[in-house]
Amino acid sequence: MLRLSPAAGYAIRAVLYMASQTPDRRCEAQEIARHEDIPVQFLWKILQLLCRGRLLRSVRGTGGGYQLTVSPEQIPLIAIVEAVGGSTGKDECVLRFQHCSSEKPCALHERWAGLKSQFFEMLEKTTVADLVRDCQRKKGEPV
Image (cartoon, rainbow, N blue to C red; front, side, top):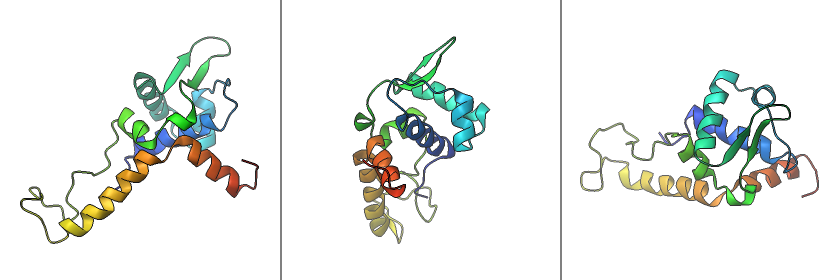
């Protein structure tokens, strides 16, 4: 099905939390896990993947933590999903046929293709900054 993996969902939530902080602030994994209700052991693995994907940097020692390496405006959601290896179901058949393709389509193939295209376009065009602004608007905070 067309959905984000748990790792990708948690990764987006963690990055969104960090993006909502002041730019120079470092966030500890325990803080993010507590605020976003993410199992801390799982979050550490996700944060490592985001560091390897060069979306975050990790600073050790007193005052250490994680912070974004680039501005939220420069991070499309697809970059986060790809950094954690999150499956989106892009290549899965909605009817679960193993050999569904354009050459040998299932009954829903063409109709489903449009929805998949919209979903991936949204992941490519939506940035972390867009989500931060959306959250601020919902809370009535100035943008």
